[in-house]
Structure formats: structure tokens, C-alpha cells
Length: 183
Image (cartoon, rainbow, N blue to C red; front, top):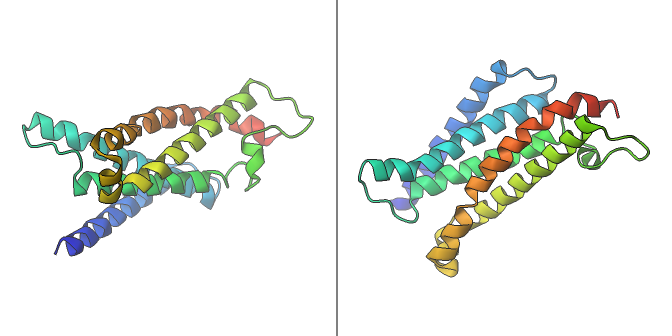
């Protein structure tokens, strides 16, 4: 019965992610499918991440038990991570058309001005956030909780707040994006 409940919950979260993405698609200005997917997955992931982070404080405010891990918070976090990683994959196809290295370093011999440096820095922040999301995804299960123990597992899970901070820094990427495309 618990397995069926988990499958249904994941199905609902997958549909919610899709609905958010479809809702964002026409509202975001995009020049390509990759850019549209980047926006759609970014907003879906961000909303799911905010929801996952809000579950604990809402429990405390309502004076409900707030266990170390709940199935709902874990599953919402899993979908937030999947959307965030999807955003990174789609985003790396937007400005440089899949030329991965150009997201992080200037073209040899080109001058990297402030706009280009902002672009590179934001991409490093975005990649760090994606790596953290991947690690959190790997830790989002009962086996990891048992093997690591509650204190270490909880400490690692709290790096979710670092993902939010990195995501905010990554938002500044578009400052230098148009300029960098000319490099």
C-alpha cells in the first residue's frame, strides 16, 4: 500500500511539474525550445523547492509533528532536484548552442569584459547548484538517512538553502549573456 501511495504521489508531482512548466512557457520570452525548457524547468524547480522548504515551518506553525524526514517533503524535493537539473541541461543549450566550455571560459584570444565575467560567474553558480541538487537527490532516501545518521544527513539536506542562494546568483547570468554571445 505504501508503494502505491508513493507512486501516486510521484505521479501527481510529475503532473504538477509539467503544469507549472506549461503555464510558464507562454509567459517567458524565449527564442528557442531549449530556452523555453530552461525557463519552464527553472520555475517548476524553484516553486517545488520553495514548497519542500515550507513544509517544516508550516508544521511548526501549526504545532504538528515535524519529523526529520517525511515522504511528502522528500518526494517534493526529488522533483525539485529533477527540474533543477533539467534546467541546467536545457540552459546549457541556450546561448552557446551546446558548446559547453564557452559557458565557463572566454573564447581563446577574446577579451572578457564585466558582462562576460558576470555570465561566466553566474554559470559557475548554476553548475554548483546543479551538483548540489544531484547530491541531494542521491541522499533523498531512507537508506542514506540510516547510513549517514540523522545529524550528518540533516546537515547535508540543509545545503538546500545554499542551492537557493546559488540560484539567486545564477539569475544574474542574463546580464552578460547577450554580450557574451558576440564573443
